[in-house]
Length: 306
Image 1 (cartoon, rainbow, N blue to C red):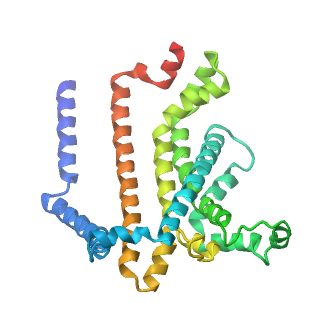
Image 2 (cartoon, one colour):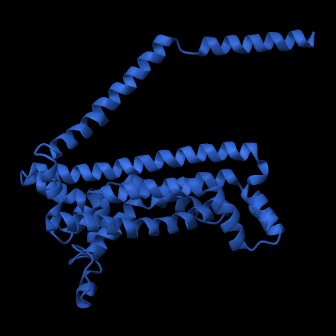
């Protein structure tokens, strides 16, 4: 009787899944709709950017980057990203570890502060720094007395970029660390590991792909940030213009080939970021399959063998 019941339940479950499954026409309609959306809002604009950038030939495209202002904009963008991303990585690791592994007064308030750049306009973010460090800001007179310039200079661009990008790493790490729990760290401490060893050899390996994913997203936003940087930069050619600002200036001057060439370079950097994101996702899936096949290959087991 039990065998008949199990067979009947299995048949009922398969029937329910077939009933809930969409029809082939429905699946085809959704696929076509998704492809049409991507073509209209992603592939077509990208194709237009590269088409305009190469409209006068490859030689003109390459020569667009020989301009001194263009080269400075590229270098400044890479410099700002190279400083903002490591700072946000350190902050994200510290904040996510504190939030996910410990309870303390003000924990929810810290989470709210981390989400703040998502909630306010980047332009407002830039205005905050103008209010603090501008010539007529709260700290402006003191900075002027000590010959320190933040607004309309590289430090202001870095500060604005750090502000608008600091949630990305933390927001990727917090769920990963919360899902991990504290059991493995406690076991590592029981085995004689120090707190730093437990973090380096257990916590960090378990969240490394979430960390890389957050760094990739943070880097993409840092290189493409426009609003906050536009407010604090002053649009000084050859000094404070990043790549997005350079695109705007060239376009407003009707130098369309150079503007779209710079935009194409930004798009290539974005595509490289997308490729890195896809690689990370593939590596995560591969690592999960490997851990399922070899349960002893976890960071805690490796630590126990030392």
